[in-house]
Amino acid sequence: MSNQLVVIRAVEATKMGAAAPAKFPLGEVIAMQSSAQAHDVIESGAMVGVWESTPGRFERFLPHREFSHIVQGWCVFEPEGLEPVELHAGDAVLFPANCKGVWDIKENFKKSYCLF
Image (tube, rainbow, N blue to C red):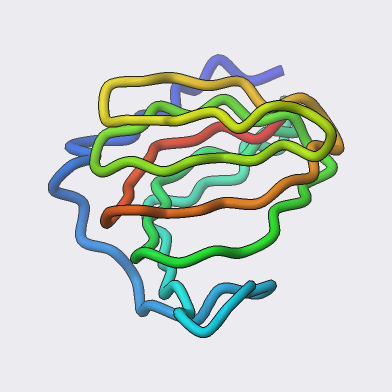
């Protein structure tokens, strides 16, 4: 196992990559998304980085657990079978593995994340 630290710097000011449409949009407003500072941490099986999205609704499904810290904007996340949750800048959230749901991005949204 490596003792290497992976640091994501200046998340709010991170220069993002090229934006692309959401993979699983819902409705006519198609959210544009991009990421930056994405690093695979092979030894731990994790991936860390920065992700952002413009307003829109789209489906979410990831097989990994995810810890995220929201640094800009707000949204409502609608987990399948559970009550919707509002997430605002300054909040942190832990998504369980295999979490399905719908992102409803209300305002330009940016987060740092760790998938593991």
